[in-house]
Length: 297
Image (cartoon, rainbow, N blue to C red; front, top):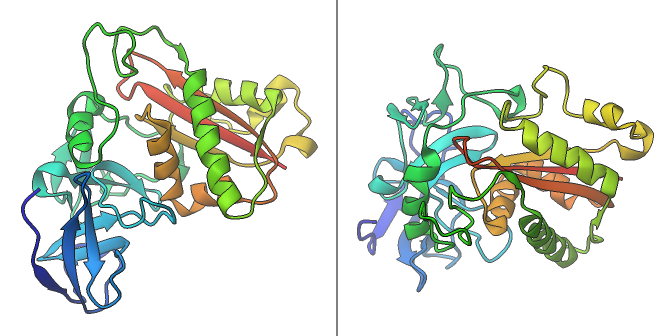
């Protein structure tokens, strides 16, 4: 990323990114921590800014998570507020506009749009998967946000190796649950407990994501019809569902969901006591890793 160690005045702007929130006038400075992660620091309060921020006519997204990652600049393809953006690592993490990238077209407001210029939304069910994003994007993303290295070698121990067999990644699920329950505990929420019926439902839904990513099933029915398929009492199991793709790293899956208001509400909802989680790996799919978490009260 280019050197940003200078003071910049960010002003309210009505530019082409009309879908992004406007910002009040303030003085801020880019700073990079020892791990290479960039933050945009309010010079008055000394606190990192969050959400969409503008610098020299370009927009950036800074993590809104209420944890150690708060304010960290995100890069790569990200679902933010249920819309898809490409935070271009080759442009310092700026929101890409009027650009084609890995199967998506990003329009003038930065959102991925379809052929009639409407944005893809997470709630709409099926939409095109990214083409080859796992291969091209992950290495760039790791340069900006340290994490597990990527390899397409024969190393069967590497979670990103294409040579692993298809199947469920139980160790990743357990690690994710530990991360989530630690975050819930910090906010005074009870830990979520594994429910075997919900685990089976989550496994079915995670595998279905390969065919139809979102909250519809491949046959067009709603996600929660999986309860009927398994004979689960709806009155006892009715709850919410989160879905994610691309990441193996449980911490990144957690952060991705936490940065979305609706997904975060599911994860932190004090009414939920039980959960089922699945991570399905399909080496032949574009995005490789498909996650689902189901919640119940």
